[in-house]
Length: 186
Image (cartoon, rainbow, N blue to C red):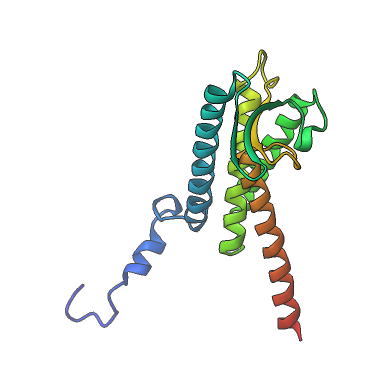
């Protein structure tokens, strides 16, 4: 800048805004980071526990844990609570659509509870989808590995826990958002 020039020097914000969009960090990219890392963590934990269950319980062994909780290996080719047996390919396609839809929905900010819920649901759905894709004789004909058994409730796995916790977080977020909107409108 010339000493006679009275114009202020451009700020760093002005410089960043003049850069092409691809060279500035995207707000949506940062919105994806937390939920995607959470989803990856859920998938890793889910697959490690399923690997353990298949290796330790496949001979019919049942491990009593506490009260009615036991680890008991089961394979579910249907959906929740063993309904829809044989519908694995359809369930896999629906799970894939849900995962993609949730990933796209991360572009809109819904707060930490929303992103936590989305990360849990994506991770749980992906964990069970991996079973359907890779634990069968044919493409999408696999069964989901379940092993957490309370004996008075359907057998489930870590992915199922994540899906339910995530769904509860999303419902709670929707209720809280609705309540805040009503309070703000009055």
